[in-house]
Structure formats: C-alpha cells, structure tokens
Image (cartoon, rainbow, N blue to C red; front, side):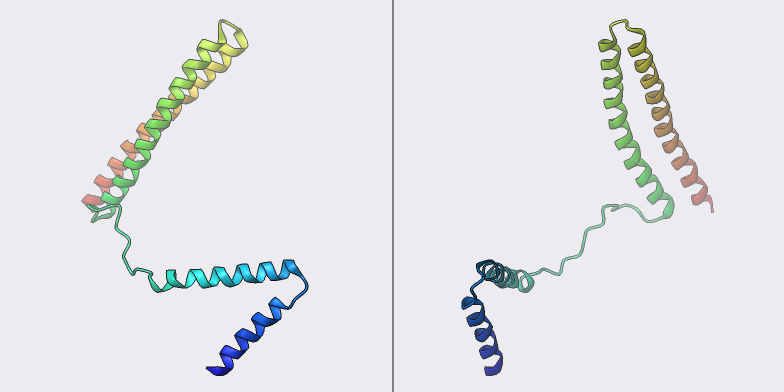
Length: 133
C-alpha cells in the first residue's frame, strides 16, 4: 500500500513540476473527472428496467401492441401532412406548377394514410392467425 501511495504522489509531483501547462491542465482534468466519477459507481442502483408492454403475454399481443404504436405515430404524422398539403394549396394561389405540386402531395398523403390503416388491418389479421395456431 505504501508503494502505491508513493507512486501516485510521485506522478502528481511529476505533473506539477512539468513545464507544459497544457499537459498539466489535461492531467488535472482527467484526475478530477475520475475522482468525481467514483461515487457514481459506488451509488449505482441495481434496478430492473420496467417492461413497456405490461399486458403482452403472446406473440400476437406483441404484434398488436407494436402496430398500435406505429398506427398512433402514423396518425399524427398523417395529420401534420394533411395540414401541410392544405398549406400548399393555399400558397399555390391558382399557379399551375404549385397546384400540381400540392395535388401530388395530397396523393402521397392519402397513400400514406392507406398504408397506416393497412398496417393496422394486417396486424389484426396476423394476430388472429397466430391465436388460432
């Protein structure tokens, strides 16, 4: 133990006596970072991560829960895109090129909405099939 203490203080003395201020600054920064991070290791808590899917016991329920999340996020994105498409129609003010862009945007928003709805229908179908197995 005495050798370790003398080694540490010998290194500290070497750093302090160094002429390179940048090296001294970096060394002290590392030293204090290590010194201040030690309590976080000692006080770390061994807690389990809670399950976000509390009522999921089967694969079909897991698929339904995942597709429900995708559908909810997709619905929000769909609402934002519908508002944006309406904005494009208002800004177009009868200009043919901009109206074409707005109509194209509306078409893709409707296709996206159909895909989000289709994902939910697919999840219900897969869940029912897996339950029957």
